[in-house]
View 1 (cartoon, rainbow, N blue to C red):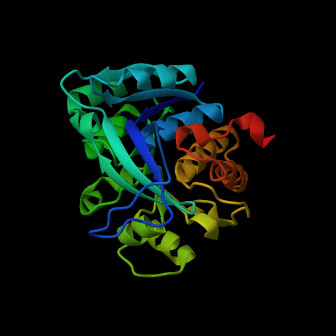
View 2 (cartoon, helix red, strand yellow; view 1 turned 60 degrees about the horizontal axis):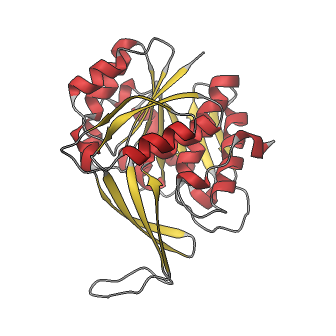
Length: 293
């Protein structure tokens, strides 16, 4: 059975509902507040597990991070390679939600303490044919990509949050590169507004890499060895877009591993993400595979 090594971030999410996004020099009273489990790494792990994959989450939390171990375990995700660092603080995010859209301020904390020794030791426990799923919220991503490819793993990289240093990552080694329109245009070095052209421009840069471009209400695009594909979004009442992209990634990869059918994977992922956006929260908003039947 294919194993998934989800090497990723774990963040406490501090979520504030507001009637508009706070402006510079403004003090704004929130309509509500809640704290939840988040981080793109955790969201992807939960999504892939709910989609039916065998998932191991690797990463690092601080002295206050035991609830993450418990939460992942309760959701069926293995935590054999999750380190609790007593000298660090767990990552956290301030999330402002307004009319279904969000703004996020992130502090990496223990996620930024992941070192090459932890990476090599963890990757060595997996084998050719397994998948490494990562994002850009942890330290030493380039080394992680190289270590995984040396071990024979396939690599799924969600290039968020995107930054200048990502251009120097060994993206040519990545099997699936997942981006939104902002990240895609940045990595393709283009100001092109046409989503299909962004996806194709990226594929010209990374010819051996499958490009997965998610653009919210405008749907999703994929360019791979089989051609160019588009999947429209589903029209639903949006409550909170947090974790929608992570849901899409997790369910897309699950279906691709099962069937290898790009169109089926995009449709499956779109259905899952359409449920996520109708619910508040991050990981807790992700549906199970049974809900898609």
